[in-house]
Amino acid sequence: MIDLKDLRENPGKYRDGCAKKGMAVDIDQVLELDAQRRALLTEQEQLRAQQRGIEKESGPAIGKLKGQMGKAAGEEKARLEKELAEVMAKPAALKAKIGDLEGRISAIEPGLNALLLTVPLPPDGDVPVGKGSEDNVEIRKWNPEAGPNAPGGKAFDTSKSFESQRGFKPKTHLELVEKLGLADFERGVKMAGSRSYVLTGDGMLLHNAVLRYAYDFMTLTHGFRAMSVPVLVKESCMVGTGFFPAGREQAYHIEESKRGGGNDLFLTGTGEVGLMGIHEGEILDEEKLPLKYTTVSTCFRREAGAAGKDTAGLYRIHQFDKVEQVVICKADESESRAWHKRMIGYVETLLQGLGLPYRLLQCCTGDLGVKNADMIDIESWMPGRGAMTKDGPTGEYGETHSASRLYDYQCRRLNMRYRAGGEGGKGATVFCHSLNNTVAASPRILIPILEMWQNGDGTVTVPPALRAYMGGREKIG
Image (cartoon, rainbow, N blue to C red):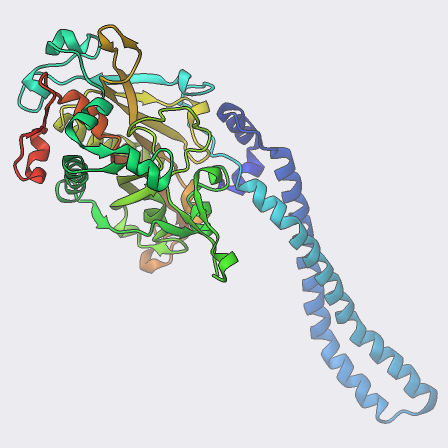
């Protein structure tokens, strides 16, 4: 959620942010509802002040009138009774007005809050303006040089054909999976429908090897704290992390309320949801920031709107496993930017350790989500993608990672703060900043591994970095 005070003071910033992200939000309606609510709250507080003053004054007056009534009779007593009734009626009348204002405020707040949840975080000024992924800008690319961590021990250049560098036409991951018995799509679809699969034998071993390698890399090498998180969460957790309302159609919904349960639940599409939800509603110790968390979790995405896109194979599926990294730091833009670069650097090191060519893409404003101030996608080279020619597939980059900088957007929604700069814990509370990035999502990451490390005889060499997790195996097939 955005800072409402900042929106009041800089409405143009948010109108511009909506336009750049291609999101239609009526900022004027937000401001109008906010102004109405604030006016009613001001009036209500003024009436409460009057009520407190009258109650303070009326106590002695009521006591005095009752004392006089005890000695009065006739018309004098009737006059005193009328005066007493008038004094006692004033607080009641103010209470009724206050109650009426409370009802009017309550009627405004749901609509205002619903609109506020849709206002996107404005993109940073250095994010290129564009309409969608076609306007993303390549930052840099990396290709492996000859050496033990390079597929085949040889250098690879994505601008040249696979066959010219390896001496044979590349097989797609679908062909390799079928030949080597690494997955069973038919039985996966039989059990769970389209975009389902069963990893089998060495396919499952390779899947687990990648996840274990990535998890150890983040925890043992880079000091992130290992965490487990729920993958079935309440709606408040999805709203708090910014995945609702905009991404509701992508989530699987468990309607527990219809079965007598207290809350509906949702399957998460990333471990980020659980990692961020851990400290919802808490005031953190500034000295313990940044918090560096990583988890490996099963993720679920409906892939709504993806009809006809990558329907075959392991690229676009409903269920997968992912190692995710999250950083919660102080509210400092320079610190957030530094962590963003560092988190991307972890992934680059991991991909280089696997010998996988990749490129970094600066996402344009139109390709940012509602919650991102900036986002960098990392795409790995997949020789089996692209156009099919007589010489085999041309190869193509495919997204495998996404690194996001969110400033206080999630933490404001989650009410996650720290007490800044105060001695003895008496400083003002400030909303934290948060960042996240994929470490490894499998089985998608298996596509570049299988296709880049394939051999001319149809076998696949196990990358040296993964062999310790495969019982020392050097080859599949």
